[in-house]
Amino acid sequence: MKKFFLIALLITNLCFCQNNEDNAFETNYKLLLENLTNQNWQKSQDLAKKLLDITEPIDSMQIQKEVIRYMYIYSTAGLLNEKQLTQKEALKKVLFLKSKQMIMPSHLFNNNCYVNCTNLKDDEPNTFFTGVNNTQGTQIFSFEYVQIANGIKESVTELEGKYIQLRGQLNEITVEGNLLPRFKLKFINGDYKIKSR
Image 1 (cartoon, helix red, strand yellow):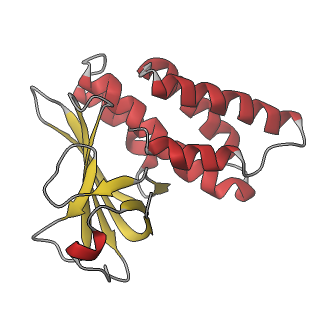
Image 2 (cartoon, rainbow, N blue to C red; image 1 turned 90 degrees about the vertical axis):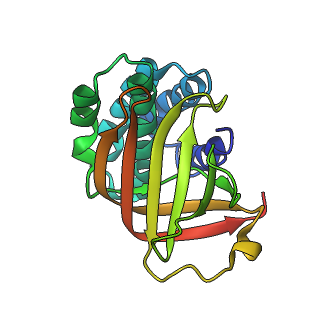
């Protein structure tokens, strides 16, 4: 999950400096990163919601809100997986994000991996699949499908071993699994960036 914070650190350098609202954002954002790193899910969820309240009305903070929306879902998934929320409660908390644009963390493309990595969905052309877990890979948080609007240009061989950063509009969100409850997220109008690291 450390790759997740590569995007997060980029955002920290984007825009804060001028007023109290910027300072409040920066302070709370750093706290959010710390709590996500330490897997303090309730605190992470509270901070992500607070940051969304700050950023949603501000047009110039589009990138920030796209990343924080995902952080909110991720922290809610942590609470769901640890059974601090029921499936119904978890779904209710995140439904307001349906149809919103999000930026997901970069994951390593590995066509034979399903733990914190990205590969291609066999039966859906131009769709990336990511299995998202906690840092240790012991808990399943979500199965994520991102349909790429302009198609995936590279072959599996060309993608293998590269980090893939995905972005898309959340089209469907459900909860599945009783023993290991997790979100199933489907994104449309997606795009992607390939990073060597």
